[in-house]
Length: 189
Image 1: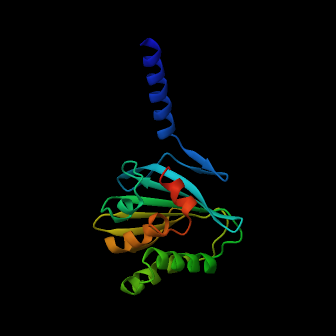
Image 2: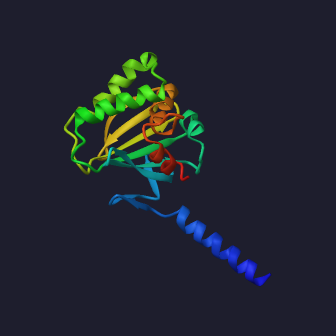
Image 3: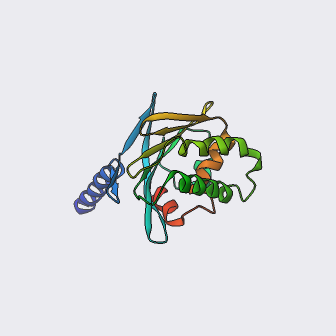
């Protein structure tokens, strides 16, 4: 009985430490928590976006409480954030813009017309100034406000609507994500 209790306490303590810890992937540290305004979110999981053999960016998904259901996360009218840090000199503004457009296409099963204006405005975020390795984007969804896109801590744009949030987060969390390994990492699977 005593051995089982010690094992349970050890497991519980190690789970607490790992669930509250920051994570380092591809040389990028994803903090255990991030905060904007009065909203604080916890790291759900993280991963690396790869294409061929290039590691393009490191991403972390932040939620009010951990979840493993990508579709529910994308559709929920709850604060949600994804943090992307560019880790390759191969990523420039034009390539990132095209990748985001392609991601919306996958997320929305090819029917991007209903959100074309919002998508175009959002993609403009990546074209305002040239991207470079080390740039960090935080894409926050706030109920009643929409998605706020920050680059290196500076607000770039706000796109209203839960439909836009669902399409945006669907890029990484839908049934047809841009990178299935990245999706698994973001969901902590």
